[in-house]
Length: 146
Image 1 (cartoon, rainbow, N blue to C red):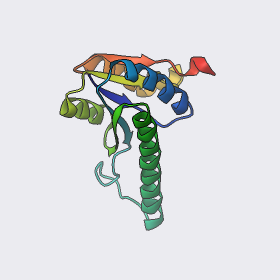
Image 2: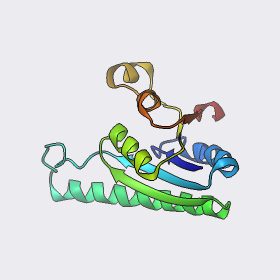
Image 3: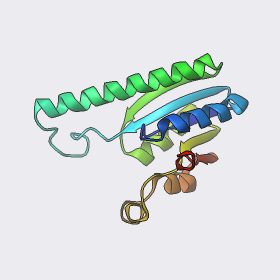
Image 4: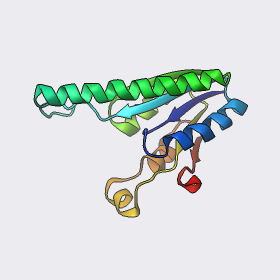
């Protein structure tokens, strides 16, 4: 089974990774851990800003990639073949494209941590993904472990 594991690298990431790794160890042959960054400002028609801003964005992306690589190493130590990816683009579209590209058998993600007003105004990636994904979506509750 090929799993696409999604993370926002938020406050509950460590708990989510532990739960997802336990689940994946039982079922997965291969895992892709993916974090989607906001699109490149030039891509969406905005000026990227001064060099300091571009440098800060690049530094954040490198830090996120290092974090995912460290996590992938931990999964490999548990005997799970793992690849980590940081991808820039519109979140939902990028996830769906990556799932199709790797022919994912399932998508695993943490439960959304935004409030109702946020979801009402901006939507919820989990809800949209559940409706549009080409495969099952497993949503692991993360806040319950606090």
